Amino acid sequence: MRKALPSIAGLAIVLAVMAACSTTKVVPVSTVPRSPIPDDQNVVVFPCWDGMSDEECTAYIQRPFDVIADITRAQDARSPGDVLLESFLSAGCRVAPGETTLVFRAPMPLPATFYDALPPLLKTARNLGANGLIILAVAPTGATGVTVKARAIYLHDLPPIPNTTLAP
Image (tube, rainbow, N blue to C red):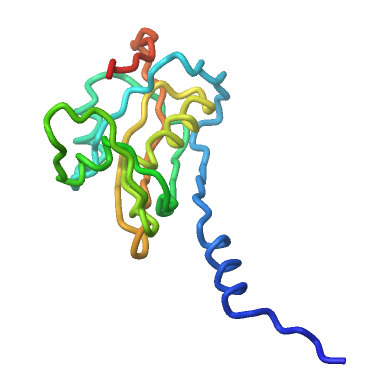
């Protein structure tokens, strides 16, 4: 009796699923535990990645803070599928005047961007009790991924900022 060998297509699917895992790594810095902040509170994001030193970044933030943890988010490509109008327009495409909704089918995975990695980073920061996030580096990973290195911080003099959503 002959053993069935897995097909190349089946193996490719398994490898693709294994490779399509976005990950978040947290390295605690502070020994003081903080309570998570609620989802209805914003986390202030500070972009400090343009070759800024720690001193320059601290001066840029202009308020006292404690570092809670360093976070690295490896974000894989977005799955093929329906892409909304906002993504279509951000790619430089235009639609006819008066067109309000547009959905098209993406034939292949779309490259991940900083904006794909940001929501999981904000959720991780909230869970750590951070009300601020310093973006230290954004770099492409492979052909379609992105890696974001960030620092979760607690800003001492920051009142809670309600999480608001822009109206369409």
